[in-house]
Length: 104
Image (cartoon, rainbow, N blue to C red; front, side):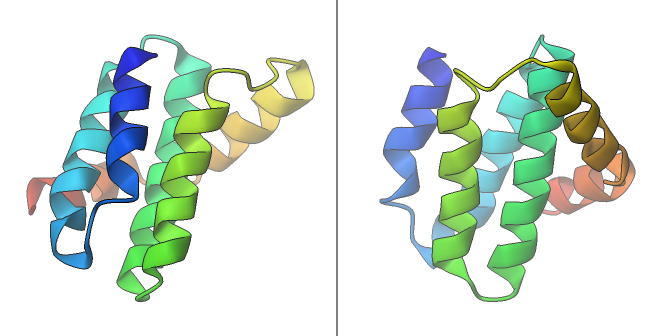
């Protein structure tokens, strides 16, 4: 969780020009996550943040990133939450996400 805190500390200071590098850092945290549920959680919010960023909504983008990292420490692992997170994560094309990050 120390890595999450480091990323959280940087979110507010990131400018529009540096977000692509920041997405790469979040993507690495997502790929290195050992818990499958938390991995899917981070995948969802990374995809949401990228979408918001490309609409020009930097504040919403940062909100999604903060929400993902802050709640990762204490999100409920009840069956309903796990099923909803897995369902949404399955809608995100992993290859498209990987290709987006690879171009940064």
